[in-house]
Length: 302
Image (cartoon, rainbow, N blue to C red):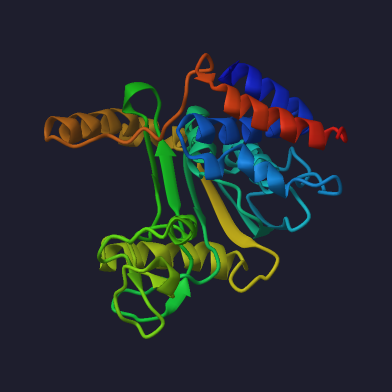
């Protein structure tokens, strides 16, 4: 077994040892701790010896568009997130649009990192068409997750949601297992509902029209404004950071956030806090073996 802290230390060193490497490593290890292994160290299969470094850090431009096709995706997203800390602090608001991004996992760790620094963080990722519009019969956008984080302490909120009823990985797993799909999540090639994973041609949006429109928002930001739509090299991602500190006196946003949390939870609602794990959490021997194999490959040992 291995503690999450030690796993993060070892993977961070293998990824370069800087702040972006640590944020990327933390995001990957966290996914495995939460049981989301397809978003964890399995993504190191995308790492190659010739993968370029993430875009240079320390950039304080308020708006940037970056081609990350040659980068290891979690490192590219982590580097962009860290650059937004300085840019938003200097300009009040900053955004980075990435294109050519291969799968990088969960959005929550990156927007949560911005919130922990006193910012409001938002992010979204588009992908190849696999989801129909509400009322539609063929795929037009990706599964298009969206995330937002703000606040600190007990009032901190971290939202990370897919805008589709399932993921492409869910369909692949169901196909491999020969398992039926739940009702109301997928369409076949003729636009009819199906429970057969092998027949799926499109997923349906989560929550009908609301999920469809949120998926469209992500597509507009990451796919259209960011240039990711139709890019054969990878996905489009947007990350937005806002510094609300200048408005605290006039708006009292932190008190309002705490009040909203109280209203939400007292009314029976679940206040989303977006995961996060203790550094002392232990991962089992199977995970440790997989990590060792990845680290050996990354260091050139066979």
